[in-house]
Amino acid sequence: MIEVNDKIRAKVEALPDSPGVYRWKDKDGRIIYVGKAKNLKNRVRSYVREDKNRSPKVAAMIRHADDLDITMTGSEMEALILECNLIKEMHPKYNISLRDDKSYPYVKITTGDEWPRIFVTRNIRRDDHAKYYGPFTDVGSLRKTLSVLRRYYPIRTCRSMKVPRPCLQYHLHLCCAPCFNYCTKEEYQRYVKTICDLFEGKSTELVKELQQKMEQASEALEYEKAAEFRNQIRAIQSVQQRQNIISNEGDFDVVGMARDGSHTGLEVFYIRYGRMVGKENFSIPESADEQDQDIITAFIKDFYAGNPMSVPKEIILPMLPKDSELLLEWLKQIKGTEVKMIVPERGFKRKLKDMAMANAKKYLSDKKLQWEYQDAREQGAVKKLKELLNLPRLPERMECFDISHNQGAETTGSMAVFEHGRPAKSEYRKFKLVTTQGHADDFKSMAEVMQRRYGNRKDWPEPDLIVLDGGLGQLHAALPVIRNAGCNAPVIGLAKRIEEIYVEGSDVPVVLDHHEPALQLLQFIRDEAHRFVITYHRSWTNKRNTESILDHVEGIGPTRRNALWHAFRSLDEMKKATEEELASVPGMNKKAAANLYRFFRLRKDEKQMVIAGIHADPSGANQP
Image (cartoon, rainbow, N blue to C red; front, side):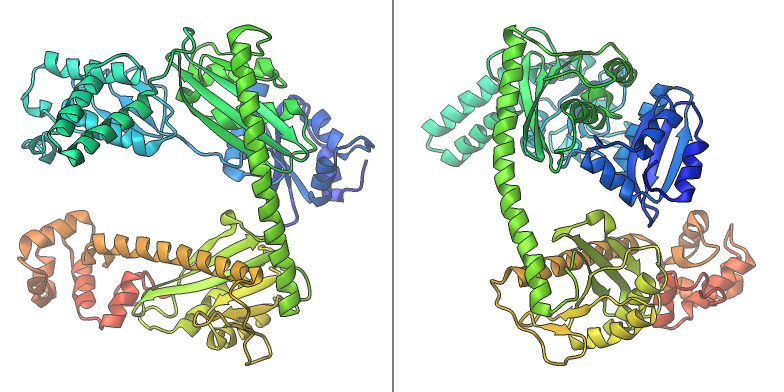
């Protein structure tokens, strides 16, 4: 066996012969690789066995591995499903994953309903009572098309038809109010069929009608109106993709792959109803150690996991993946019907595959130029930063902190993390502050964030550089906390006035040229921390603004809150009421009435602390 710790060696020797999923972890407990196995003992032993032909990637993974965890499953299929879910959730460092992975919108029409509705969704589930159209890559054109369609075919978008009166959509002529039978079922179904025909690429009268209106408006010199009709036509055509029919064989995906050195590019064509409705490309950097079959296998797992509508009847590939029979069975479970994977050698589908391969090659060459420029710039900025600030080591992991509050209320903090000059968004953290609620003290707030980050979280890796959004005051407030916590990383403060940099041990700032990439890197991470904290602060404030003040009183829930508003005409009347009067409200009791009575008589800053969650009740009995 190669050099591994005793804990791993013992676990490997005790592995069962059953199928399952294994997870390699580093010294910080983070999962760095997830894999499945038909036989856990045989598969995992292969990692720790001496092998001169081992790929550099596997060798690096084993060097960083500090622990092993497994989950036994009943079958290899269950192991495959669990592996896909864990990779999607954890994004392990050494697993192949799609850099540009994201979900795409579909149009859903609930054709199984008595009065079908139409809406955009990204949550696809197997549904025999609805039609899905997509995926669509141009979301703007899709929404514009739906807006145009509803003017001509006013079918409902609402979830419930149990309403006391027709809603605003009816009065805007965007819905024919089937909830009140203002249109016949025959007319409504005709609207639905026309919309379905449009998304299936069939000829409809709508585009012809819009074309006539555009020409009439142009002849009448109403050019703005003509331009509006023109934009509507373009939006519909963009979604419908009115192009030549390329196949009579229904729905399939075409996957092309290109490789260049350590990088891989993938191109996917979506063919639906015999037409190309869209395409997407994906990049996998640093994949030199991976075999072509491994990349295709990982792509299929990642791309089709958990989305039944994204799985077509047939997938055209440059080569068959490993465990193709198992993958086909898995895809069948997702889709609910048989799925084929083919590698065409001749004919029309071979031409499509070659076209996807050519597109993948072009995409990869463009992406590689972008990566090379970005890598050179980022690595150059990291090295320059070390030189300019006289840092003991390259700042490969930087952590930046910012504070936000509303005149002392709702104080929040954020931590943005950059690794190798790039944002590591999975490492970002946010803090709801406790000690400074009600007081606009940025220095104390920053000290609290430092204590919570460096004093309480020993399991997080130590950074190579700590950046504070602020000047000398922020630096002096944070440094004692950081050092008392045992963290020896260099700390700097970046002031916003002229972007001067304050370093430990000196009151004289370092001022860099604004065109210096090292300064721009610091500005980037500072702006990320600011964006992150502002987003969190706004979401918290918006949540508070939509809550009732009564929601923060222990013992007051929705039922009692509604009873109080029925009993008192205003909040002022409620505040003037005695404990006995509050307790006499239906559903209230003496304890809840006493809590509410005390809450109304707290000082403003004490109320803010209760609302912030610092006290569990108005009396302050449970202050943490």
